[in-house]
Amino acid sequence: MISGCIGLDTRDDAIRDIKFSIVATTKVIVTDEAGNLAPKGSIARLALLAGEKEPILTEFLNKYGVKEAKSLVWISSMPSVGNVTNNEVNALAAGTCFLSSTIEGKSVTINLTVVANATNDVASVTISAPTTTSLSINGTAQLTAIAKNTNGTQLNGKTFEWFSENANILTVSSTGLVTAIANGEAEVHAKVEGIKSNSITFSVGSINQLTGTFQNAGGYMAKGTVTAKEQNGKLIVELGSDFSASVALGTFIYLANSTSGGTVKSAGLELGQWSSGPITFEVSGVTLNQYKYVVVLCKPAGVTFGFAELKP
Image (cartoon, rainbow, N blue to C red; front, side, top):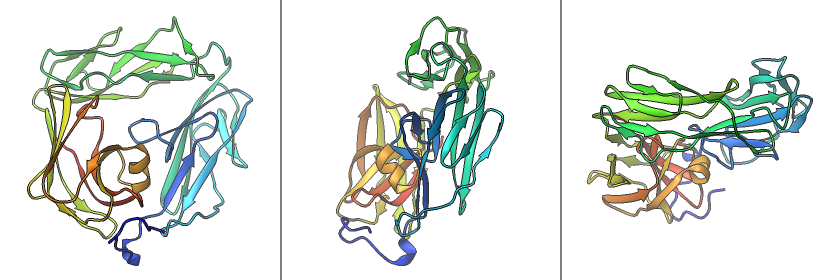
């Protein structure tokens, strides 16, 4: 089950938790917790034309990593818009809804958008990641977004509405210009024809460094501290002098928005291999708030040894 990591503890109490995930099909876009694309996961987006059906594939792994067939019960937040029957998503009428199923405490969710016109109607809205998400007071950042139809074709000439989740910290203009007015954190998103985009989180003022304390996972050990900061256009991640962890052949450090080993391996950002002592990683094109966790991962087996949540 977990061969490939020499020295890996295989006691029953160290076995990973169960995993329940959606596997991408033709039109299903699987994302991690932050909305980044991933091969599979517990969150998915799907856009269909009214009257369409789309097969949905799910995967359930028990605590030993063995795949099991499970009978799913799906709940729709708006049954008049869409539902799931016989492992098929049914797009019934224009609108949006959430389709969800839960097994043994694990859940999967599909964010379904149904359109009446496959060519002209907006099916998805995406904000591109900005060059930085750390701003000083009165600092600005220009956001851009695109709208696409169900075929993935970009739609031009659409009107974007921009929203700040906390106007006391950030304001955003009708053109997507973000202005910082007070210290703190706030999210910004856009909408087109009622379809909501992903959110971008900005840190303002004193929040220019995040720290975390490692905790154990799956019966393995990780302890010590980590800091992350933006400097000269790069993200600097430093494991402190007090850091230590279980070691196996293929122990790597990742940035991720999940602590599940399989999701970290498939959707996280690999920083590099670790064997002992403090270490510093530098990476370009990544912002301070893009990832929530620093994860110690046995890469060959996809097993999490420990993780630290990054906080102001």
